[in-house]
Image: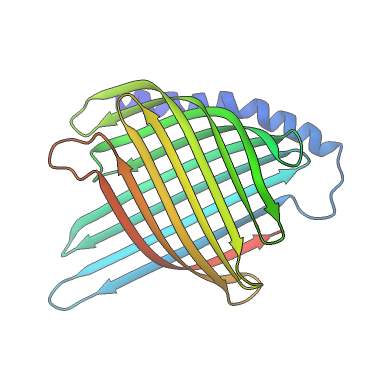
Length: 249
């Protein structure tokens, strides 16, 4: 069952994403841009302790964005791995791909593909696809506030072998505020609600630029599932201090 799920989801992703890429490439061919449409960031943090106990923790994130005309596509992946005295205490990976088509400066349509694996959440994996409408409620030189929502479908498998397939609703909000020329505050919230389970992920972050391409970022992440197996906690939190390398516009 797990092999079939791993095969079906990429096929769904390819089918849904291909039309968006074809349309955006056609639009890009008609538009000459001075700046590169590509941008992204990579961040990494790690800690190791020895002595009476052996502990290690590594977390990393990577994002890549392509923006041309009314189209934009973004891919994000993050991972957290930690252990204590040789035993794994955290093993989580999340990948997210989304596309947008802007109707005007504030309103847009989107689609979203998301896959998460967390060995300690009670779920072997949770994979979802959703589409809907979004709006930028506040846009200025100081920052931006946007929100989006739409229906979707989720396929998941618990660690006891139970498979779940259900309709969901996706709601997402993003807030960014430029405190100064070198510092910014960011808040993101993602909710995937369904009859079987509701996933929630929130990240609060403060980053300070050290150079044009390097920054130091402190983030606090909350991950919550409303339905988990017995003896499994519903909420996990994680605090990270990462070095960030940004490129592109």
